[in-house]
Amino acid sequence: MNLTKRFFYYFGGFAIGLVLLYFFVGGAGASCEYDYGPNARTLKNIRLKEHQFSEITRNSLSRHGLDTLAIEQLFRTGDVIFSESNTRLDSCKIYVIEGIVYENELRITVENCDSLATVTAAEIK
Image (tube, rainbow, N blue to C red; front, side):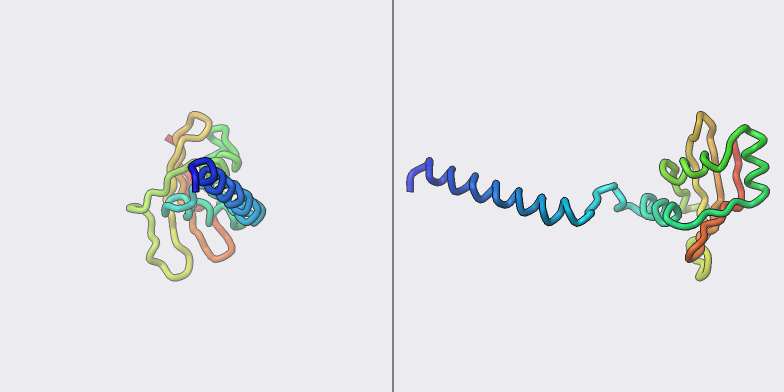
């Protein structure tokens, strides 16, 4: 078999493989949103739940001119501080999340239960 036929078969198979990959993976709703590390998985788990905010949190945010959208932004871009979090609890795990939102350094404490995530404290530095 000469060289041109080899290239034809190789690129023909490669093109068919790309088309099949596009249909199987592209249409299945598969995502590559970097949800592989523990930080990203924890934040995604919290984002998918209903959120509740304590009065202490609302007062702390309003004193600094922020609202609950700042916390929603922190759920997307924040960093979970696992060394200060309590992840060994059976019922509701407690996470400490830090990040910069609207040029403010924000630190929150989240109680993550099965169907509800409650922000129990917020500290703006």
